[in-house]
Image (tube, rainbow, N blue to C red; front, top):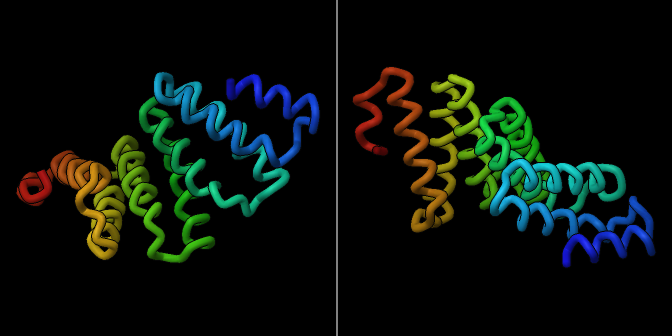
Length: 168
């Protein structure tokens, strides 16, 4: 149904109408549930359109964060790193340094950096995610647990087994 709605929008309003952005974003979410490759394709399409016709679109940080997550799942860590950095930059620009989406962005960036073997940098990003979640009082969710796990694995992978004991 999302695909059909998008096709109708294209037919009626054209390829570059801003109304397509939420359809592409929703399509990415649905496709990404079973295929990160398809999810990232549709999300990148939504981003490209938004960059062209609505660069301040409020879901840009979320869309970049989703690409980061999909690319991490695919083992495309450099692409994930770039997407996470975009998510973080846009969220900070739109909502400031305490935006809750930054927790996801920092943790995703930590995952990408760990995947690239840049463990010390990953540790810094995971700590940013954890610190912000503690500040916001959002420790009771899976994102907090994921950041703790990522922190411990990065510390362990960098040869700091003693430091990894606490988060793991």
